[in-house]
Length: 279
Image (cartoon, rainbow, N blue to C red):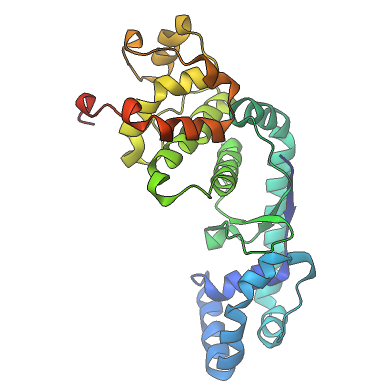
């Protein structure tokens, strides 16, 4: 996985214009632009997809609204702070990417190519993984509050959103299974490995039961031998009757896509309704 952190004026301005206002003065400026340049403001709203197709070479058909924002002192300050934020994100990634990439290879078993992380101010509290048709490069818009005492949390969040984007083409009918497996892979196993503290059963509470049902097969996918099942159950506080499962040896040869396909094909065997517990 290769992440390139970039501050792009157009995507930053677009998010300042169309996400929730981050200050009273910006809110008033947006209202003023709307009153005086309604046509141009509406036209700018449609630019998001065009920017994400090719952020580096995007040229607006009408740059009126962009120029108004660019010429303000407030934008100058926001841009400067966003650049500082980008540097912090880049340092966190550079300091931890060797371990992160090694663990991801073990878990995903497929390659993720270059992603441009289009950095916006963390005050926007936004993540956008929109993928327009014909996009020239994978992108993710990222502006989330940074916990400098827990830098790996930022990497986990970034990786989670990227993997979700990589696996977005499954049918809606299988959404819960796909979401549960992505959580097991990134929010649970990856987070556990990079932090050395178990993160199992964190995530969407509505997926907890499904993840418990998939968990024995997940251990087989990870290549955990049957003799170590108890150790992992103790680590992750997930208990199951190991004698009730046939060890599926082929799972450790699959990538995450293959594991998802296995779970979809075998969902009637995996999800044991008679073993539902009250959580």
